[in-house]
Length: 62
Length: 407
Image 1: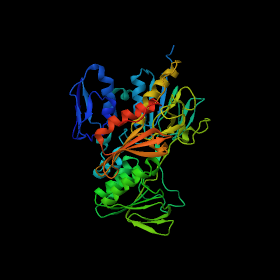
Image 2: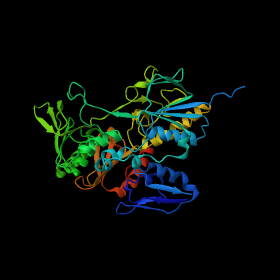
Image 3: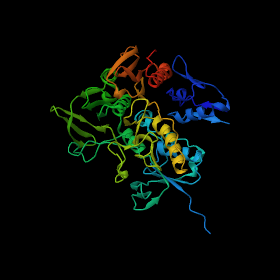
Image 4: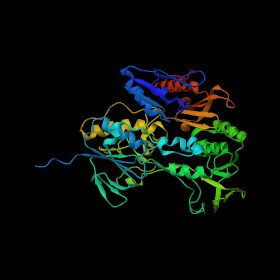
């Protein structure tokens, strides 16, 4: 599955990092970084991250 | 021969908790009907921006509306529909229009409403703003013009965020509150004073520790009289005096409704099989802390309680056993005020003392909240990059009574 984050919306709240720490992280400046894609095994975590995002910046394709 | 009527779950409340529990029920295999009763006129939307970016820019429902899982479309959404009573024994809900709806399963997702000052203090007949709905936000946004004198009553999170947003829009803001520092009850004095200093640097005036005696006037000319005899005048009045859970409709069922609705750890109302609560209205015990049921009005609560409550309800309606694992969500929230991001984990409000774990309150810091020398919460002022690690450490400490905090 591909993971898209609308960085224009993202406010670096980090809720996705708590839900799916293997896929999302905050860099040293506190800005979101993320994997472009993830294995099917991570789907539940990534879906939880997308739902947890306060600004709904995360979309999942595939 | 006729087919039996479909079994029905009624979800009372159509905001985030109602949406997420509906999705979880349908994704979890419920093949009967789900009817969602929402007393708002439109689809569920995200509320945290209503005191921050959406208040600054003007709210837009299309932007704020939640993306919904495809399952949610299989539910029947009744907007502008309010439940006024429920009979858990007869399994019926009574609507404001007098109709009744029978159910097999019930979800209480009615959340909270904004409180207002009592009528003997507020002599404006309910004038002035509150901030809870998108309509509230739109109405307040329209009045936050540069140079407007804004009086915010209440120094909790919403009051502080409204003060910061209004200041950013060029308003002259005075915050009036009975507490002696902002966010005193949830976060304590040290963090409250540190946040107050940032507000004051931005130009906000505070009148703290003095109760409001009366509020009078009309739009453009309000007077807030304090109990020490002083008066604060303003063009715009905002009441940020907390929220009240919407649980009155559950009266008459022998439930504990002293603050929201008391549930067991499975989120059943009392211990009634077939009826659960989610979100801000649910007062549930969390073994991560103790056996005291608490309401948690935070962003993640609707999502986490929705998953738990849906699983409980589906198991109860199938006559199966509910998940024996304890429900132990870690409460967390954030607040944006100016360039400061506050992030909180755990339940700082139950602590008996605080300790600076990292940094400096005048700049960026991690503050530990301890009860009986045990860490029960952590708050970050700034330091966003540290949030994940602090949260993980707190969880480890709470899960293991022998563990100690190590940054």
